[in-house]
Length: 448
Image (cartoon, rainbow, N blue to C red; front, side):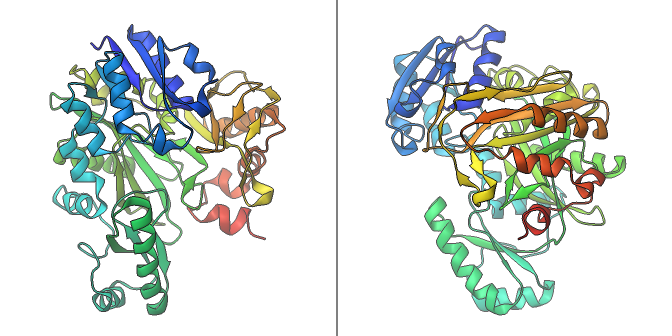
């Protein structure tokens, strides 16, 4: 087992990794930017190293500075968390070349599934359903027009690299197709330094369902069932839950088994997530693979009782999985909502600044994953999420009721948050019935 791990991230995920390391008896090093110098979790780490100014390019995305901090503090491994460098194959390669283990998948697997075009080809070989569309990169607009006439509009143009909704455009006709290809290329080049785009049939009124997977270096690979992440705004997840309220058991098992086939085909180990779009008839198609731990991993932890961060570390250290597929059972229902420092009444404008008052919810089945506290100043430099509120109860109805109660107890001021929208979602009859899709929030809840 590792003796010391450096955490190349910030905020709640840094704290989450510190806690897992402490339980494993592993010493921790936290790197931080000048914007995070007063973060309370730094005091829980055994060592803390400042690696630069507030802009992420000068700190959390600065590979030489992170490696230098790792070498100076003599760590065995680096945990990248999520975001920043978590899916950066070059960073993983640099870590391992410096004899520092990267707590994530091998570079070969990251390459196999990191590019959506390559991932789609691999999925077909592994007999994982794929959305009808182009076989590879769209280079010729006229060919794209002919393809879309065959598969039918609407279609979606996607960047081969990256995620988070960037480099994506929906086209309903030839005019919007041609414009969308150019717009998606420009956005993808700017965001990911890769202008490659491809086309797929746009699944209207689809649901976003993903499968948590983990594999070790001894050939063992399992799934930890699925999460439903359908409630989104601009492709950014707002609510995640497990189990999915719309899957029957047969479809659930087929979906999860296909995810395991894919990661095995990629030679993947460590934790990852295979994401799918599910249509109105419960047909599912792969979207992408996230080669890292996800923000919403606590949902899976609550229904399975498995500490995913702990297991990530064990797998990276070369140990076999501590459980088999037959041991992993979904118990009860878990829901997570992301609390962001944004103002829904002002088109989700960021709301950084000092938290002067903070009253947290509690009670049976309530979990709060966060690094913030009363007196904490939310910096304007990073993602606006200040924490994740998770509930776990015996049934979905009970989980929704508990979440409503927990949200109503939650008080943070004077910064604005997304709590009012989350309450609106929990109170919505269509959400309660599971009759929603990925466009529901914008089409129904936020419609003017």
